[in-house]
Length: 278
Image (cartoon, rainbow, N blue to C red; front, side):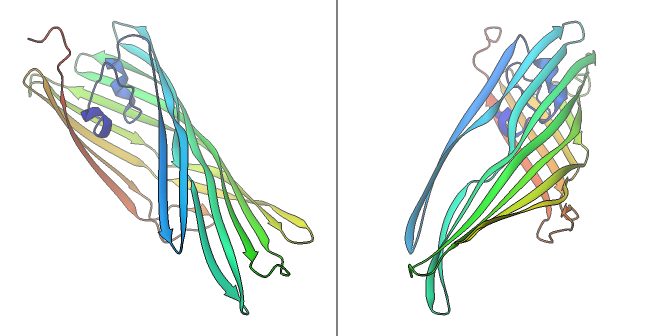
């Protein structure tokens, strides 16, 4: 479907997209939408390593409120970022070999709540509030092949929370070009509050270092999309979005390995289930 990868300018009757809240005016009726994902990856270098995970990709709920201005209320919960890996390496210290296991889990999720309405036949407007939260855990476990040597474990736990918003508009002006729609949305920059704790486990005792705090920047995101109906059944759409991570602060500094991201998406949709079409 075109709406899956290029949705900024699509006023869908069925799909609840969070890329542009102005699209929600097209939704007809009460709707609950959700999804899931299963991943399995296997790597081979020295020793085999397999990793699998199942996650819920979230849900979205749309509630029609009023029809003359197409007022719609939408809420949703979905993951924004996800960490999931299990890696293994080997090394040696003073001739003593060891195995190191690296694991990561968790991520950042988003709860959103917003509304959209249609003040004119050619214009839809929408806005949504976003609250981001989540915990990411990373652990490194070292075991020596020599049983007389004790290994160690280091765990890093980082918690995030913060809020922001997204605004969007959808223009459809048939008098200029039949069945052409233009969508634009902006998510202003936001900063998440972050705290980081470390736990160190040795042969004799455990110790916890707590209290490190900072911010995690999420830069402004801009999206622009165009959709065009071709004939009675074919719908074409193209999307562009950008986000500049070059100066994003992570805790107390700029990592230096981040860059600007640009995304293009395009799609075609063949609609063959509308009883009103010949």
